[in-house]
Length: 346
Image 1: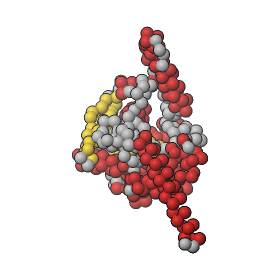
Image 2 (image 1 turned 180 degrees about the horizontal axis):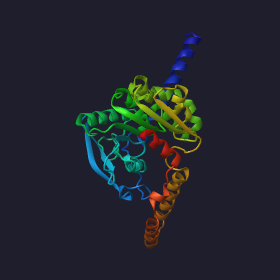
Image 3 (image 1 turned 30 degrees about the vertical axis):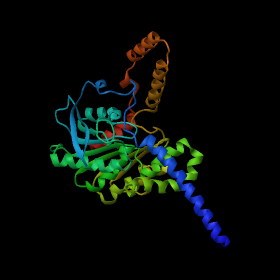
Image 4 (image 1 turned 60 degrees about the vertical axis):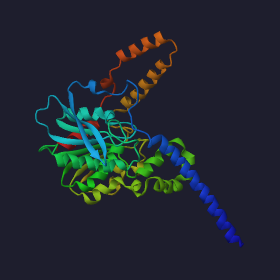
């Protein structure tokens, strides 16, 4: 055999084992991130429905390929004439409950909010979250159900999403130019594959560079072409719905190049409004102090649970809960709050 033939065979063998390594890495990542049900953290530091006495809600349910998508339609008890009907799509690592800060803000401003749990999350059916691109198709299905059953009444329809939900909102706009009046996208990403790679990069910064090319092939093998559905597809055909894209430059979860806000800053659309701040981290509606407060509270609570003496642990836990005021400890970033509400009200 000639030298070039031997080199080719060696290259094929190396490439085979390289892909095998990428498959193994992606399988492990998916097993921990995607192929599990989305649930909220099991600690008392998270906001609860009971923290907002003026909030009321009624159950919501629709079908999705034989499975149920569930959630609630929220409103403020003091609202007599709602301004509009908002469909809220939540982010990854949880359920719609983690967006009670947003829901309360929107309800107090006079809106009805349909906040549902994504497929494989919280109240909804589904063995696991499957993959990131599924969020677009679930939201499209929820919108179709709202329109079909006229759940919004005569109220204008708005969309609202953060992170994974922001990606879903931006992508779902493709089919609803004549239906959705406005949309708010907070910290949304362009590509679900790149979003997954960013999470991998955060854990293994040096190793991720080596396996990035193979991960794209692995994604295609595990999830098919749908995993490459981009959040930018919505405004390619939708030139009517006004969209507010929000992003903070110090967001570590969504990298700058994969941000929808960055994309539309570079590729302007008449119906896309971009607002980028230097600070705010991943959840810029909440002050950075509030975001840090959560992590500190969780750490303190976990330290209490490590207490070996049951009586001491019980006393410390009771004291912790007694002094826990979640609403006050998670203050709004007034700049972002006003930006969102002004955009929706105009």
